[in-house]
Image (tube, rainbow, N blue to C red; front, side):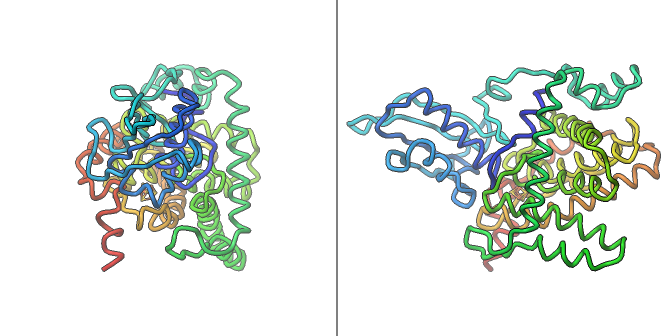
Length: 399
Ligand code: SF4
């Protein structure tokens, strides 16, 4: 598995695969060909189908230069390696293209060339299955975060501290930001109102209302192009911060425990990324919000004193009960159903934590198996439901 730095990426929304990934690809191409007078970028499959709503063209043109960049949209051509394909070319004086580079935005902001899992990033974890990691930890009397420390070295904690800081800032900014989100749906930001209403309720309802408000805050910041952390993607970036911020505030949880919880969530997300996918275009929303819920459930369970088994069960439940969930964002914007979906997944993560605690970790389906099923289900989903905005809610909205 790759470093957690490849999973928790700090950047700007609204989409890790459709905005962050293409922006990084454009930066790489520009570094190689800085002096070209014109560039042509062809977007394929899902990148072309929902790229306008996700601001894919804007992200690429901003890097290469808006006046010298031509974007070609090919939503009907899906390259076999991955649905998020893009081809960069230089165009000469005669209008002929040269120096073609085809690259894929494979989820969470990561890039890959055909046949590779991710560009130029080494594996830093030897074990890819949670069952093996659990065994490694159990034999040494350790927790999941110890395995992160063992594989990544102590500098990972500085990075996770920065991640946590950006998450906190996104929650707190989002709770203050009012107004309408960009994109044309005229969707109003809801986080400040949810927060204020929640504060007026008694303890139980307040707790749930606050979790909703924190997730809305981060997801709305993302939809508005704000600075967030992919956890594991931009579209699902509200779930983990919401749960951790809530636990941090309501239980006076120490920063170090929150960082250990983030590392635990990272292991869970990394296993899904390695064995299946964290890309909505590849495997539907189960791979984004489903994995985010698993990560948050594991983090919550660790925070509340869970051991290796209950953390694994909480993660499994967070993912299992999102299996089959489609990706059909209206107008290709990361707004409906994405923003509300983050709020619900945050609440579900806390439920999964509690359920796993009551069950004392005893269960029949392992997290690894749920991940494998998620990958298979994703491949079986028609492309209508994999971030093309051609089916489901995206289609029904205009009827
Ligand atoms: S529906 Fe889910 S997978 Fe699709 S863009 Fe929204 S958050 Fe991402």
